[in-house]
Length: 287
Ligand SMILES: [Zn+2]
Image 1 (cartoon, rainbow, N blue to C red):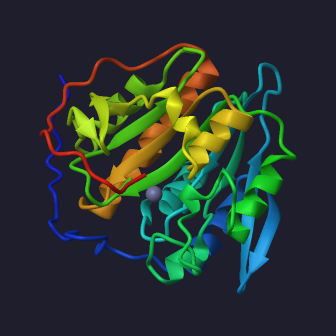
Image 2: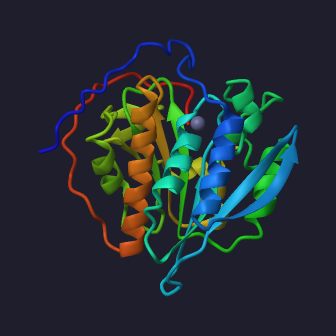
């Protein structure tokens, strides 16, 4: 039986994110150095206001049965755990031999300068993937269009209203799911949100499986672009911002490692999690 983590809510984030902020320039510099040290190639696909938007590529050590994974972070500038998890994933270097990883560690650096969800023009990038208005999303999509299809996409996010970690699964072909393995990996590190309703959608054990009709909405998050154009399976990870930053970074990192190793090994791993949580009302914001 898993121990229930003693990580507790901070009670800071009452109508927005008031937790730790990061020096995004320093974090991106650390990411660049760590990536170079571990054999990643870097491609700049957009530049503005002194920042380069970088796509990092880790080639597979064993090209046989190669699995291609796209990981994005830093879409919302008030969600520091994503870029920090990207850094930790590069530094820990726990990638299976047969995976090729495309890692975009920060899609919204200007939002981080302002500690705000949206970009500098007030556009929520994660609502901008159907008819993109922002340069950030247009350039990301232009770069995506040049890539082959992905076996898996992972979008790294946080939710300041959440009572625990949760994730969205897109898996229309009913492939082997890595959702349970991710939740099992997170549970010893960070509470999981066991509400039966998260963000106005039915949830079970910290997992939301949105209905396919979501693709009809006009304001696509990145996940809907990915599942429509680039991949047949993916997850949006949501760490709870009202918990200590370390716990959120470790939770996201553990979930990514669980999904990547599951995909590489080709069979679901992990066990049914034993978790705690509390029910709560639907909310309007998020992802
Ligand atoms: Zn987010």
